[in-house]
Image 1 (cartoon, rainbow over the protein chains, first blue to last red):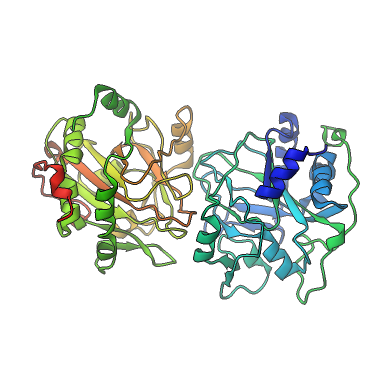
Image 2: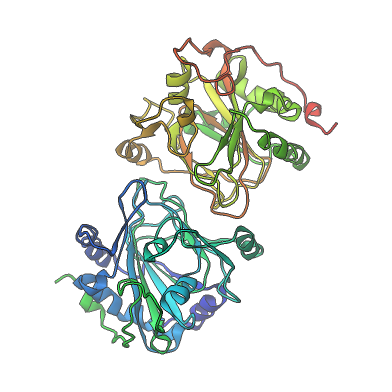
Amino acid sequence: MKLTDDQVEAYERDGFLLLPAYFSADEVALMRAELPAVFGVESPALIREAGSGVVRGVHGVHESNPVFAALVHQARMVEPARQLLDSDVYVHQFKINAKLALVGDVWEWHQDFLFWHEEDGMPEPRALTIGLFLDDVDEFNGPLMLVPGSHHGDLCEVSRQPDTEGWASTLTSSLKYQVRADTLADAVDGRGIVAPKGPAGSVLIFHSKILHGSAPNMSPRNRTIVLTTYNSVDNALAEVADPRPEFLASRRAVALTPRGAESLAPA
Amino acid sequence: MKLTDDQVEAYERDGFLLLPAYFSADEVALMRAELPAVFGVESPALIREAGSGVVRGVHGVHESNPVFAALVHQARMVEPARQLLDSDVYVHQFKINAKLALVGDVWEWHQDFLFWHEEDGMPEPRALTIGLFLDDVDEFNGPLMLVPGSHHGDLCEVSRQPDTEGWASTLTSSLKYQVRADTLADAVDGRGIVAPKGPAGSVLIFHSKILHGSAPNMSPRNRTIVLTTYNSVDNALAEVADPRPEFLASRRAVALTPRGAESLAPA
């Protein structure tokens, strides 16, 4: 369950860590089988792509779906989060990004912590996200792109988009806070961009301050990823004037108890 | 000037051929120096991105700009086209796709010949395009994606978008003729997708029937490509009811006379 010293060092240096084929094909199949149900229920937590109207993603279903509830409690998820954040953790946000074949749209470059700090009152960037690939991720189906090392130092300067009241604009293909082009160029200069790829079942752990985004899915294959954000229980959200819904930013900072792999096995 | 037998065989099998660093850095610099002028003149041949309004591309400037006029006459361009098309050739279409850093938008999957046949009256797919990279092309700045071998066989089935009268809809990020998702999946199945990359000065020769597209430019670096389409003089355009402008589809099927490299040297 524990990451090696080299893995911890790589995460701290680069801001991300790829663990190929971390979950088994059977476990992936179990989770994929839940997608029609979780994408099929209309709710405010279900986000659609502009234009095409297909599902872009769904939030918070770890609260209602037993398979995804089991996932976020897996020791394989919780222990690395505890180790890297050096404390007990809870789920700040849970979402499944569909990025469907040929229609899944762009995620512009952003740093998660900016949104969580500005919108949700998260005090410090003591959070990380574990992205679990439910499909093989390749160069063509919109892999996550990251700027290695960009979690060090200050947050990038952003421009706030006009007409972005309300929380919906924090989830669309045109984001509320946009990283300035010159700032992005500076960040990429000397660091480059990487797009970790791997088979279904791989996980990508990334820092809450790392610059990342993703291109549209140009391939005829889906690129569905489950994104679980763990926050330190010592970093619970402060009060904010107009809090986003609980399914976007949990205010229940209660330490998770890790569960064994058997809890994710088919019933 | 001649392609090798292996190169011809690869082109015929795959429908494309990459020639890395085919033009020199000096020649690339000479052409890049022309971009502000050719992108800076408002005309019907200048296409802008939906939304941002930045330049998407410009057509037909080989007719007015001496550097690009010299390019399309280069023996290094004309001779491979003559060889692969087995006849004299002329320029059917010339465009410069800007694909600017962070704002250059998607080109949906398409087959050029469908447009040239339907819109312009091109009888047979005896045409090819030579794409010349004016910037280094990498995984992140929207490289051309191709389905190897997809130029064999019938054209893919397409859906015609509603409200696409006039020629502008043949140039936008939402194309007039859209390859059906199931058709694309069938085409990719067993063939995969490739995205040839290389330094500025590289050229990518591709068949008029090959399925291709490109993602938006997610990087802070431009991906400007000069696309010269050569058609066989034996394949001149037929009359059509409502022809697109000359800058999109030349009706002057006059054989080009190749010129030496000195014609592209700085004055």
